[in-house]
Every structure is written in C-alpha cells, then in structure tokens.
Image 1: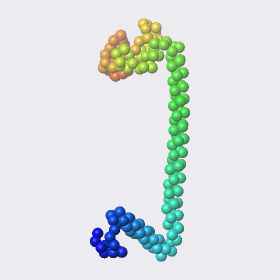
Image 2 (image 1 turned 120 degrees about the vertical axis):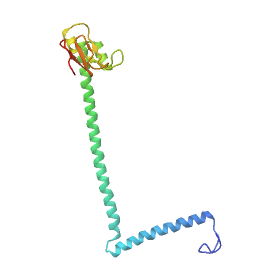
Image 3 (image 1 turned 90 degrees about the vertical axis):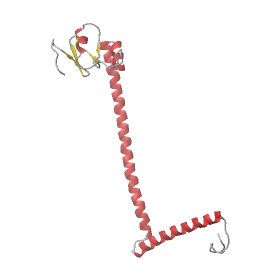
Image 4 (image 1 turned 90 degrees about the horizontal axis):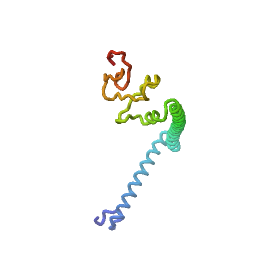
Amino acid sequence: MRKGDFPSGRFISNAQFSEYICFCRARVLCFSRLWMLNLHYQKNIPPMKIFSTECGDLQTKLKKLNNENNTLKTDLLRLAEECQNIEMENSSIKVDLKELYGEELTSILENDQVEDGHSGVLNPERLDSGEGENKIRDCSGGSNSVSDGYQCCGLRLEHVNGNRTEC
C-alpha cells in the first residue's frame, strides 16, 4: 500500500489490513441490520417483534421436530416389542416341530438348506403317511420335473395322479 491509501495516511502490515477489512465488513453488516430495523421502525413495527417472530418460528419448528422424534421413538419401541414377541413365538414353534418331527428335520428347516445347497420343499404326504424317511424335495432344478409321483412347480411341490399337470 502506498501512503495515503489508508485513511490515517500511514503504512500498515497485511495483518492489520486484513483486520481492518474484517472490521469494515462487520460495520457494513451492522449498518445493514440497523437499516432494516429502521425500516421496520418507520413502518411502526417494533424491533423486538422482528426477533420474536423469528424465535417463534424456530420454536414452532422445534416443537414439530420434538413431536416427530417422540412418535418415531414410540414406533421403534413398538416394533422392537413385536420383534421380540415374534422371536418368542418362533422358538416355541421350533420346540413343537422338534417334538413332532425330530431333531434332524428342524435343523434342516432352520438352515433352510438341503445337501446340495438349494432351498427345499417339505413333502408333507410322506411325513404324514409314514413312508420312508422325512424327506426334503429339491424343486430348484426347474419346473415340471416329476419323480415319485410329485411334480415341481417353481418351488412348490405338487402330487401328480399319474398325469403330468401344468403348473
């Protein structure tokens, strides 16, 4: 800077110049805020009403967000309780299945896997009739594959009375 560039006519460092610029910006912001307050004052709106309106809007938003937060907390607690009830119900069903069909079947159903890694379909007629062992039928190999009187339809297993049926 040259002499005379600064209002006092003396040389200043860059740090002092930066500080002066910040001071000038703060004064501009302060004056613009005062100018706005003056406009509101000229329109017979007291300055405190401006700030109270802004605060009122923020308080309204805060109340809405608190209400939404409380609603979400309530929903989360309800869902956690429902999940716990379902887990308890599932464990009691597993116990019933163990009693009815044995340990091996329930372990297969828990893993939802057959020996080759595909999910299988339970053959209820074999379980009820007592023929053979408890079997899992694999219907993942494609539809319309017929064996032992059963036809795979997608992942469903249907009994066939001698004729092939369309799924």
